[in-house]
Length: 229
Ligand code: ADP
Ligand code: MG
Image (tube, rainbow, N blue to C red; front, top):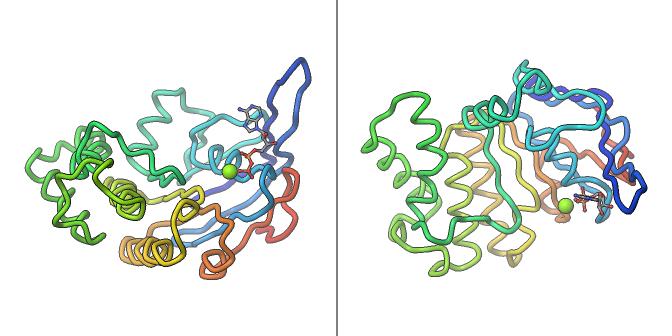
């Protein structure tokens, strides 16, 4: 299994009270699978994604990614593990505004390149190539403010795939886009996913997007309501 979660729980402390936002989530995701997480706002989708991706630590339970127990790593260890294996796409794109498109794509490549000692010229060539694949070959020197929302999300997608991640997590990747632009992003995500055999986990409100994955996990009030596996 690429992802193995057991009895995951998460709590937040607020105003002296403890709020349980995720409770007893267990799931397995196999190599190359594409899973959508759906559910009402506040049901815990983003929290679950953060735990599965190793961005946050659970209050209870465990996550193994590619056989690695995330609890056995400290924060630096988790960061290095993510740099080598995990890509992210966020709803709000989260590009660095002071960097051009190609420089944004280079950020994770440089992290991964430092681990694999790839030359700077090779990294830049790969970043340009990725931007070409998402249709932005003629905009590699644009800053995020000079790009439309759909174009910014395409840069974010190129960035997410830059380090050749085995796992890609996306939190409402089409949430800020119109339907047509969203469909282009989904097509690209699936194309890149199929080419690289990447395991894909995405949160979405979009039934069209969820329907194109091979598995739907439904959350309700912090637990799995449907789609256990
Ligand atoms: P979803 O992505 O499904 O909309 P979230 O995972 O973002 O839901 O949030 C689940 C619940 O946890 C919500 O009720 C939210 O208010 C609460 N929550 C999320 N993050 C925090 C936090 N940092 N502190 C306190 N409560 C939080
Ligand atoms: Mg959310």
